[in-house]
Image (cartoon, rainbow, N blue to C red; front, side, top):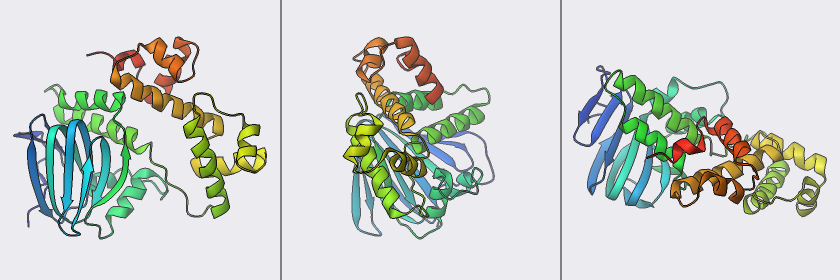
Length: 285
């Protein structure tokens, strides 16, 4: 049985049709035409599917189940008998577990460690998460596809890591050592904030809505989500702005006001600090 990552010893940049081997353990497929792909391997891999336009279906023939993707979805698989069918413009990134292994830490709650450990189990295909397609993802994908020939493999690998950081950062991985009461309390507060991130309640009101006191809520939220309530609100606002920028219907000032910031300059500064790129750069064609 062949490996999907057949470029085991040769780490050079290779282009074969719509398939690109960036380096050992990283492959992407980018096409605007309908296509199909059958995988029957024993590779342990992540599969990040990003539908720019159209839809994509993945059939897991081992477990007889099917997934449909119309946005940005992350799957993992430690043994494959799958069939991928895409209709429209798609970008699919395949990342081998041995590539992830380079970036593991000693913390099982870090996304890389969590995903790597999951890949060591016997999973035919599991959908880890689904996110709307945002402007920054499109920006990074464009850089991956348009990487200049000079040191192409290194440039592409760098951009792939940037895409991984961005997509993995939205994952909520809860430390199992945290007690269930704190997890439920933090999740209840998160649900309220998700619905009201532009005009969020004060911590006093949020505590009342969660039937607890401020001190207990702040402690539980920090334990579960590793940030303050204020920091999380800011993260949600910037994520919403990132989605609005993808649609290109509003200018930067309008996007800033839409997500709760009065001053465009302040918004741009916060956006850069969070994503490493200014909003204006995401609007460039």
